[in-house]
Length: 162
Ligand SMILES: NC(=O)c1ccc[n+]([C@@H]2O[C@H](COP(=O)([O-])OP(=O)(O)OC[C@H]3O[C@@H](n4cnc5c(N)ncnc54)[C@H](OP(=O)(O)O)[C@@H]3O)[C@@H](O)[C@H]2O)c1
Image 1 (cartoon, rainbow, N blue to C red):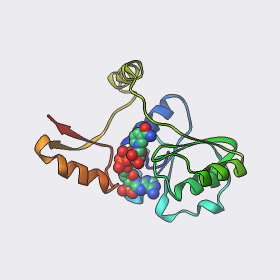
Image 2: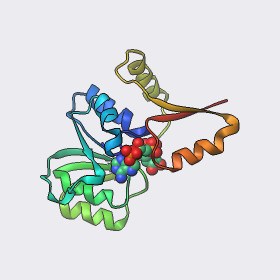
Image 3: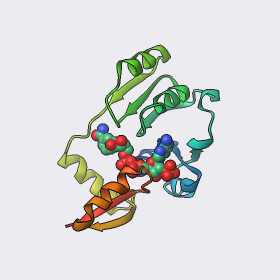
Image 4: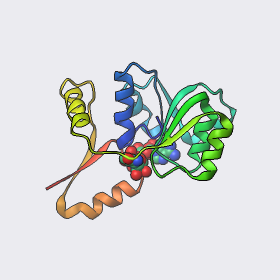
């Protein structure tokens, strides 16, 4: 799980652990302990990691970063494995890299689903997933909230109250 300390990543780590997966999460060193506290088995500091020099050891990679991170993800994904990249669509260039590496690469756009949300709400109620809110903003501070998210440094989620 890339950006395992972020809004999507910190839930994805917990969901994957809940489903029984062995999970590695990436973030910078400053968020290492947070990522491990979510249940990740292993942490990678993306600022200090030689992706190209690694074994192809992962069955599945959730790429929440995009750009060059698609190359990093391909470098560690097993042949026949799957990469889901969510920041933008998959470019033609990325698509041919996936093909060349023999991995499945997809872009998925979230779809609102009451059924899924209700299932996740149950997991939260039973504390199988614990959302982490690092900061709360009033509605009047919504510009600050946007600036916070744009910094790509948020730990967990932020909330704007109405
Ligand atoms: N397709 C969809 O339906 C969908 C749905 C939701 C979100 N998204 C997209 O998914 C992306 C992630 O969203 P988010 O809300 O989870 O982001 P976020 O909360 O802003 O992510 C911030 C976290 O990312 C970490 N980070 C930054 N650069 C990193 C890198 N190169 N490698 C690993 N970790 C890194 C930071 O940790 P450090 O400070 O330690 O670096 C920080 O904790 C966004 O582009 C968003 O638009 C797509």
